[in-house]
Each structure stands twice: as C-alpha cells, then as structure tokens.
Amino acid sequence: MKTCRLLSFSLFLTSMMLMSGCLSPQPKDDLFKQLGSLAGIERFVDIFIREIGESKEVRPYFEDTNLDRFREKQIEHICLLSGGPCTYTGDSIVESHKGMGVNEADFNALVDTAIRAMNKAGYSVATRNRLLARIAPLRGEVMEVK
Image (cartoon, rainbow, N blue to C red; front, side, top):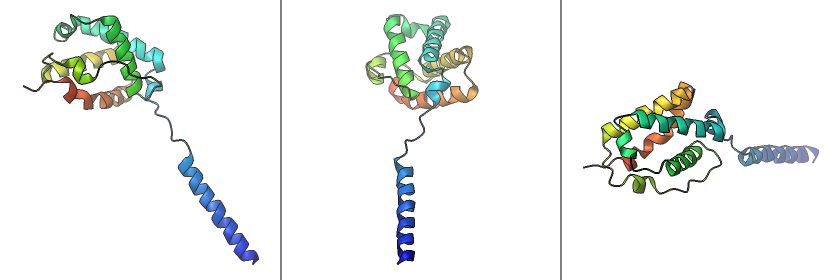
C-alpha cells in the first residue's frame, strides 16, 4: 500500500512537472531589445529616412510621401516585426505600394538603403540579418509583377 501511494505521488509530481513545462511562458523574442527597444528603432528609422533622401535610386519613390506619417508607421511596423509591444495602424503593405511599380532592382536598392541605415545605427550583423529575415517575406507584397 505504501509503495502504491509512493508510486502515485511520484506520477503526480512527474505529471505536474511536465504540465508546468507546457504552461511556462515561452521566452520572449529579444530582437526588439537588440534593436534598442523603441528608442533604438526610432533612431534607425530616422537614419533610414536620411539614407532614402541620399539615394538617387530610392528617393523618387518617396517624393510625394508624408515623411512624418511614414516615420510613424515604419516605427510601428518594425516594432511589431521585432516582437515589440506595438500595434501597426497603417495601411496594408500591398495598399501602401500599389501603383508604385516597384521592381526587383528597386526593392534591392531599398534593402541596401536599409542595410546602410542599420550599419550606421550600430546594429550587429546578426541583429541586422534577423530583422532582414522578418522583412524579406514582405517582398512579394511590395513589388508589382508586370
């Protein structure tokens, strides 16, 4: 009888430990912190906007853009993509780029501009690559196939 109770108690403890492992919160995504949290993302976006202004390939796509709104929505979007506590309140990626005629070369030029901005913001190669990996799936929503 004592052995049976001990076995039952042991099974109970084992099952509780297994269940608690399932219920434990998963580790939070740390990319948001690697980007410098909200202040770091704001700094990166400000550098990115300056880099856009200096790029003869990319700048024409932003000539009619409300830069204050663009800045706000970029910050929200990168914050969200990086696992931060933000909500994106802008238009869809498809709607934002509709009619712009962005092709592969244009998209690549924008990525190069973003990489320059990330480098100037002081992001490590690993952090930069993690962010790019989250942005890359949006490629098809930005480009217009002709």
